[in-house]
Image (cartoon, rainbow, N blue to C red; front, side, top):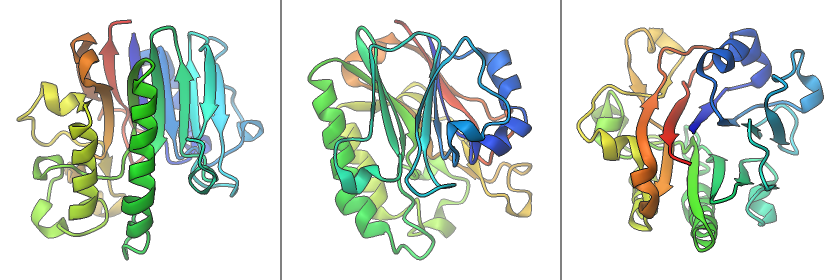
Length: 253
């Protein structure tokens, strides 16, 4: 089973830049999308019929929002984590399958001035981790998304100049470590511990993508007990259409 995650930074714009070609070429069985910034009726081109499509738009139009596309119809799909203050922005969806849950997540950005850092690190992160831990009590958990943090220095091109900036603060990095300590594995880094210059997001400024001045802030994670079901973990950095690229795993169903 091929499972992907992609922050599309606007599904309407991404569709005009090759999103449907991406689906045709890579044929993911499941893909979680973040930052879709749209409602279903706003799509000019529908998703392929082979995919069941589930939406969790934000209450604020044109902002945030997630989608799950799945070739296999899930047993159930749940929007949010069950806490109203965290669920208004459409940041989490969970699809339940026979022996695992797939969660797609778009973690709040701390903002350039770090004004949202306290909410992100003191409220959101603990609540989301608790949600994952509750799911894990029932079934295997696979989650993927834009977690808006580069965990280690190897995960961004310029760690020294970005230390303390949004996405690379000590608090955000420590909270990702708590996810790992709770038994969830960053599949790419586990399989490729020394892989450098493998990023998933590049600023639109100054030709950053052409120069590969990027950050690895998009992840595919599984619970520790299921890591042996992951045959590969990868970033499709050649896929354009967003300032992020898709990331994914080959997962033995």
